[in-house]
Length: 183
Image (cartoon, rainbow, N blue to C red):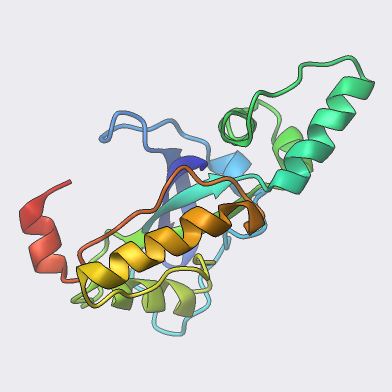
């Protein structure tokens, strides 16, 4: 449960980071995203495309949320209502040092760039190969029964995750079918 982001790399270097915005135009938060340790400033893989666009989410762990709210309370500052609002506000700070102090985290879950991937599972492998952090709890489900089992599993165990979630995301693995269905 965080803020959707888009990262653009040119010749392997992070050149732009933005919020999802209205779905077409996002807010430029490049300097603040560069302070998030989980977001690589340059890509690791040997064969780097001239342009790569990755999508993901920036979030704050429950532990960091509690730490920052405790600091805020001690300073008689603003207490944040929830981790999502804190993460969203943190990447919109005018001073990147504030963002860096909040120790945000990030998972990338898709690449918009065509790198020959035929399914979503391949996208995760590509992202990992480039040095992106992906959610370790992703799982390929082969049928609806496995989808429901995955959902039920995490519904009962969501409190053990180090971050908040607001549900499970189910994606059709075949990119052609996924694109035809729309979002």
